[in-house]
Length: 343
Image (cartoon, rainbow, N blue to C red; front, side, top):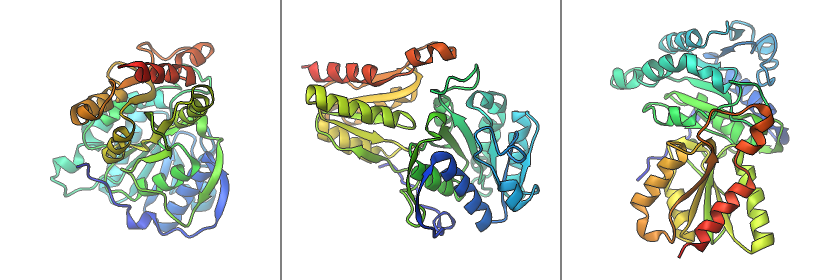
């Protein structure tokens, strides 16, 4: 059975009113509250202090807490994550920002060889309470190296937790849980959801890392997705119901590692069919692991093979071609129709 992480105590002590905020504001408040609660929490990265980050997620933190705790670093991601490891070893709780998802590749060696392995290397004696924030995925018409789907790299790396919020509420609470976690967390923020607004209850925690959420109940096909594509799946489910009478159940994974397979399995048992929706390339993408595990463990529950609606096996395209490359409702509903038509 999948082991579900319990919410860390220091990540659930905030008491604040319910408020309608954007995802950017929710993330900013999570960082502010974590820094106010624990003086060991440090926020740093390229342009995070003076500029407040490219997307203004860190705006005001340097003014509030000083440049000893929120500070700018050179555009050198390998060095950035290298000093992060040193800070964690010295007892700090570092929250570095890598400015864009495509900039994580220079830091790959530090993340895979050191951040992910330190607890195992020391037989659990040394924690790595590191949360690496990364504006991720596409949909904003950005330049090359500014829109990537890197989640499979991190999910494949034992020792890292991988989190992808889809709502402002999850952005706030999952970031609080991540900062309170003794394990390193890759916190992938869907850029095209940054300005989405929703109500956040700052007093009552959302489910912790390792819990999925059923965003829409259904009976015909389970749709598994995460991040910005949760909204795409919900829109497709509305179209499916209006035009075809299909009932889609939308499951927001929220946490890719650890995966809440119990919720996934319960949904697939209800519907008998499953489509995985994600932005990354199809081959060896996160959907491939989900399809394999569902087929292995739920074979006799399935009425059709698990299908995948994904990006293509090509480099991420120029901005003008992005809308043709990213999976949308049409690509998802095509898979749904195929699943329903299979005998």
